[in-house]
Image (cartoon, rainbow over all chains, first blue to last red; front, side, top):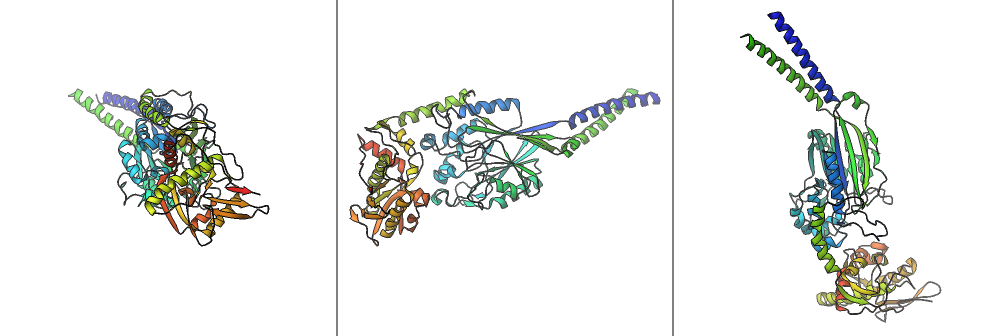
Length: 303
Length: 259
C-alpha cells in the first residue's frame, strides 16, 4: 500500500512538475508589447487640409486619425495615446469654440494624457480652465506650478499607467512662458527648471513607483541651433537619466525617424516629434521580455 | 479512509505545484526591455473616417463655414504683397485701416491720437483677391491672434524707424509717416501726418504686440516711453472694417519715395 502510494505520488509530482515547467517555460518567453501613440502641435486642425493646400494637401483630419487609432487598438491591447501640447489655436474651430471641440474629440479618441503647450494659454488661463470639463484625459505638467491659479488641482505632475503588468510612468514638461506668452494670459503660473524637475520625476517614477518605462511629454522644443544655451528635448535627454522616451512638441519638427541620444549614464533615450497639425501619428513599440538571458543581450532599437 | 488519504496527497502536491508556480510568476515580474521600434504613420486620404467622429464635427463645421463665408464687402482689384519702393497694395490698406480703427479705441480711452501705424510684412499671410470679401478672407490674411498696441515714441526713435526701413529694405506696412530716400541712401523730408518730425516730440505709433515686444528686430519700439494695449485683435480690426465698407478702396500713394 505504501509503495503504491509512493508511485502515485511520484507520478503525480512528475506530471505536476512537468506542467509547472512547461507553464514556466511558456512564461519566460512571454513578450509584452507596449504601444505608445502620439501627436503634438495639432493646433485645432480638426478637418484634413484641402486638396489645393500647397504643403499638406489632403493630409490629417481627426476622423481619419481616429480610424487609424481604432485599427491599432484592435491589433494591440497595451496602447497609450499621448499628446505633447499646443492643442489649441490655428483654425477657426478654436476662435469660435475656444477649444471645446478639440478636447471633446481627444476624449472620444480616448487620449490618455497630454501636456500643456504655450498656445494652450491663448485664451488665458481662464480659457483653458473653461474647457477642462470637456477633457476626459489627464493633463500632466511637472514644471508648471499652478498653485496660485484657477488650474490648481487640475494638472498632475505625472501618472503611472499599468498595462498588462508593465508600469508606464508619464510626466509632462512645459516651455518657459516668460517672453513667449503674455503674463496676463498665464497669470501666476510658475515655471520651474525642466532638468531638475525631470530628475525628480524620474526618481519618483523609477525608484519609488518602480516603473518599467518612463516617458516624458515635453513642449520644450526639439533643438535650438541658434540658441545653444536654451533647454530643448535633445539637451533634456542628455542631461538626465532613466527616461526611455521623450515625446516632444513646440518646434513643429518633422523627423525622418526618432533620434537616439545618450543620457548621462550612457544609456539610450529616444526623442521623437511628429511635425504638427495632426498630419502624422507617432508610434513607438516597447517589447518587454521576462527571459533574463535575452535581457542580458541588451536592447535593440529599430527606427 | 484510504481515499481520503489519497485526496490529501494530491492536495498537498497541488499546493507544492501552486507554490512553485507562484514562485515562477513572481520571478516573472522582473521584465526587461529588449526591443524598441519607432515609426511615423502619415494620416492620408487612404485612411477611413470614423463616422461617429465625423458626424460629431459636422454641425460645428457647418456653423463656422456659414459664418465665415457670409459676404461682408467687395474688393474691385486684387491687393497683393508685391513690393514697390518698400510698399505693397495690401500693406497700405492694412496700415491705413489699423490706424483708423485703432484711433476709435485710442481716442475714447486715452483722449489721444495715433500718428503712425507700422506693421510687419511677414504678418500678412495672404493676399486680398478681387471679388467678394468674407470673414474667411480676414482669417486667411491674419490667422494669428496678435492684438494692437500703441507705443509713445520720441522723434529720435521715428528717425531710427526710417533708418530701419532703409537698412532692412522690407515692405512693412506703414501709414502716417512719409519720407524720401536720396541717391546716397540717406533720408530726407521725414514727415509725420504731413509735419516735419521733431526729435523731442512724442508720437503715438500703432503696431502689433509681436513688433512691440521686439519682433523683426524693430528695437526702436523698446525705447517707448509708454505702451497702451488696445486689446483689439488685428483680425477683428479687419473684419470690422469689412463690415462697415461696401467697396474696398486702397490708397496707393508714395509714402516712401526713392530718388
